[in-house]
Image (cartoon, rainbow, N blue to C red):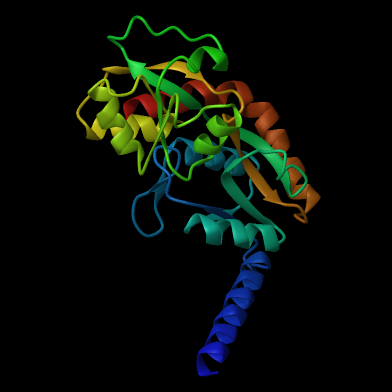
Length: 254
């Protein structure tokens, strides 16, 4: 019983603090995100960098909206913004399921999900998902990538190897025990670097079904004036921001 009341107290404190942030007497807009390099990089208390952060800061500063960015675990970040008016979130993938839950203010970086091969494998040529099926693909267990391949007709009896991690898939790719490694570009690049195989892998095919654009978004009950000012700023700055090229450069340099 004591543990029950302790949980209730913590929940009340959490909701109370969230309400205070939504009605900040200083007039600051509260923006929530997670540590997700190279898009968002936590650099110490009160410090956050990354290409997506730079884009978001540009929009708020051009709009002359004072702001504060909070870096929290993704579950908590998403919970706060979903339940708190006048709060913002980035980088949030824009999906059909989320479309009516947020105001979508400005596009940021793209998360691409791709099939990777060894550059030396000149024999592998892919133009569509059906072409992929003639090769053996490694995928990390429990990811949307695994479910997608199963839905597309891939089978462990034929052309699919399900592993505990992308790291294991990378090791198998290096040893030519699989033909392709399937996952988000960001994760694949990290694995490639950790295995010391920089510039030895290349993208063979992008999954258009799983690849999504990430956005700066806001709680659906956020003041329309704030939304309008930010959208106008994006319209003015969009050409100068060079979002796509900056995001690609950040991913390559990491």
